Each structure stands twice: as C-alpha cells, then as structure tokens.
Length: 239
Image (cartoon, rainbow, N blue to C red; front, top):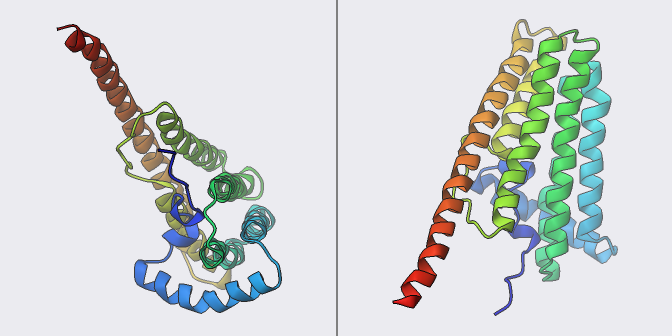
C-alpha cells in the first residue's frame, strides 16, 4: 500500500484555524465558501492565496511592529490570516489532495512566524529600547522553529512523536497576537495595557522551552523503545 496523501486541510492547524473555535470556523467556512468559489472561477489557485496571505502577514508584522504600531499591525495580520481558511476551502471545492499544498502551507507558516517575532525583536532593538525583550523575542522565534523541527524530524525517522507539548504553534501565535493587539491600544490612551506584550512574550518563551524539552524527551524514549524492539526481533526469530 502506498503512503496516504496529505491534504492541505489535513496539515497542522495554522494560526487562522487556531484563532477560531469549531463553531466560528463552521460559520466562516460558510461565509467564505462563495468567495473561494469566486476565486476558483477567476482561475486563482489555492497556492496563490497561500502566498498572498503569507505576504500580508509578513508585511503587517515587519511594517507596523518595528514602529510600535501593534494594534494596526495585528489588524492587518488578522485580515490576512483568513487566507488559511480560504485556501483550504478552495482545495476542498476543487477536490484536490496535494502533498505540495500541505508542504507549502507548513513552510510559509514558518516564514510568517519568523516575521511576527522578528517584528517584535526589531521594535525592542530600536525604539522599544529593551535588549532583554529583544532577546526574548528572538528566543521565541528560534524556539518556535526548533519545536516544529523536532516533530518533523522525529516523524521523518519513523517515530510517532506522540506528544503535543505545552505551547504549540497555535498557542504561541494566539497569545502573542492577542497581547500585541491589546497592547497597541496604549496609543489610543488605554493606560498600562502595553505591558501585556512583554508578559505574553515571556509566557511564550517559557512555554516553548518546556515544549521543546517534552518533545526531545519523547523522541529519546521512542527511539530507545524502537531500538530495543528491533534488537529483540532477531532474538525471537532465532528461537
């Protein structure tokens, strides 16, 4: 039997999907289905929507966040986040099952993550004038990439990596984006709320570290179990 095909819809949940519960997702799926059908009639591919959505997220993060415009940056990012729902909807309507689509989604998710936390780092390295929070933002960026890599690498060597971890990509982005959007209300005169973003970054950094340790420990255990099982098989066969 061949390997099962990976659909775009079956890929790891992206930030757009993570920010919506199942009821809201069903609602927005109904709302966005006519728009997805319109794009299909115009000859737009799901991959194009994925690329445009990622470009919008990157622009929102790297144009607004380094200037401290967290509210408007988060608004722009949130608008483009809906591309995660549109491209999957288009793929289902077209009846496509594509490893390439799933790969593209996952790859561009990492680009978007890097832009968001990179935007925070640029702010704190510049006008935010806080080297510690700049370092925390960079740690969030790097640890997020490594957390994703540990699972992908473990699965690529045949291990199930049967653990999710304390803070996965969905939680990292929801915590960070919600905190950034609310922190941006400080520019509208809401006092004290700007501290939400630093608190969120510390939470994400700590949670990412715990998740990384959880996954490394899981891969180590599963690897030892697999090697023990492989060594036991020839012994049993010789009996």
